[in-house]
Image (cartoon, rainbow over all chains, first blue to last red):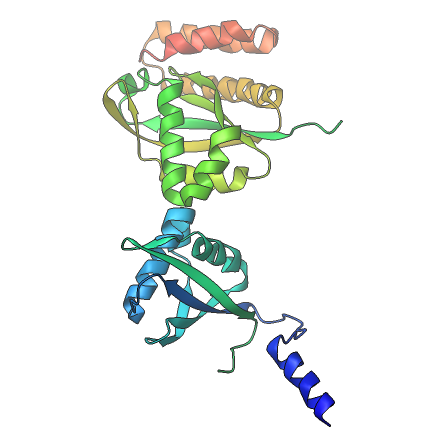
Length: 119
Length: 165
């Protein structure tokens, strides 16, 4: 029925999944939006995130363990894996990053989950 | 009405050269602590430190300082204190390290502890005396501590005179 398929499309856009959050890791899928079309390599992106952590949370923040799992050069989308306790520090420092080498930038958080994202 | 609670950290400043210790003042200690908290905990730490932190008591002769922190964040700011390697006071760098000897909820409990601690230090100093006069001074100071606990000023004055070893 056409009515049923339309409803299914609406549900697919915003999916709410309830998980028990038993694992101690969190996966953060982020996208770096820049004013001009600049792409970052993995190393540059990692350095940028660490410098943001250092400015907001100091040496303790810069020493946080996080993994850059997947990275796409074209669209600047990356997946970070971080421990549950460090998620707040990492997310807050990503939020407050405004400039990358004099270009205005913003981190958009696309997905947060306790298991690796599928895509 | 709910009371504003804070934590008072009683710290001892250890230096190699005791003469440099006399240069300490509270502005130098404040600046050193804020600087190290900023380095360790970033902008967030600097903000935590800006409002509730202050140096309440400083004794340059014995090297005891009393720092006040808000109760909510005192552990984070305490964790930054071991990273202090030097304090800049009056143009000179005093290389030192901070040793926390007591954490209290009020200044009064810290003061009670400090009195007992100073009396204990006097007793420790007695066997290390080099001259009869010093020995006599320390014995007098210890007697004063024991007999009249309220006369703490006398005990601290004699302690100060002992520091000229």
